[in-house]
Length: 232
Image (cartoon, rainbow, N blue to C red; front, side, top):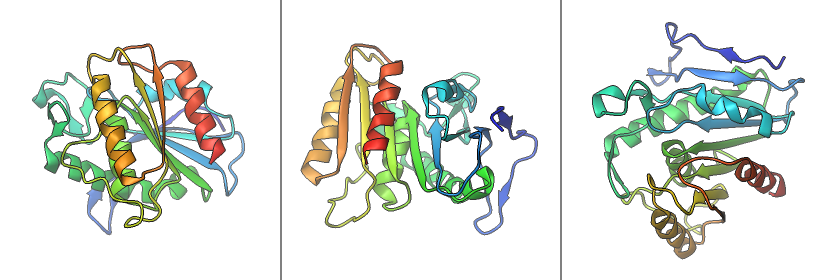
C-alpha cells in the first residue's frame, strides 16, 4: 500500500503512559511492509503543516516508509500564520526553551509509536526536517542518543542553549547530515558555520553539504541526504 494516509486531527491519539497527546501525521507506506525496513520521519518548518514534506516522497527510496508529523503548537498566536510550529523562535540562534523541550518530549512519545504506526519493526528510523524541523531533528539526536539511526537537517540550526555533548560522554549520538543554503535569508549560513564548529569541538559525526540556494530544499540535497544514510 503506497497511498497517502492521514490521521484525522479530530481524533488525536493519547499515550496512556505519559498522558501526552500523540502528534497527528500523514504516512506513505512502502509497497511491502517488512521488519527491518527504513522509516523516515520528516518534520515540517515553521508555519507549515504535516502534509508539506510528503512532497519529498518521490525523492526517497521506494522501500522507505515516510511519516510526516504535525507540530503541536498553532502558529497563529506567535505570528506564524495558519500553520503549526515546533517552538517559539526568539532571534539569531535563540528559542523559547520550554516550547522546544515540550516538543522534543512529544516527538519522543511519537517515535516510540512508529512500529505500531507502520505495522512492522523498523531496522532504521531516520529523523529529519526542514528549518524548524531540522533544528528539532538535531536537538533530538543530541539529547537522546541511541534512539534514531541518523538525523537529516535541511536548513535548521543548533539553539544557543542546547549543550552539544562530547561523543565520549554520549555514546550512540546519531550521525547528522547538515544541508544548508549559502544564500539563506531566514536561517543565515553563519548559523550553519557556528553550529558545525560546535560539532567539530565535540567530535560529533556529521556531513556538511552546502547549496547555492536560499531557504528551501533542492532535489540534489535530498539525494545527498539519502546517500549519507545509505553510507552509514
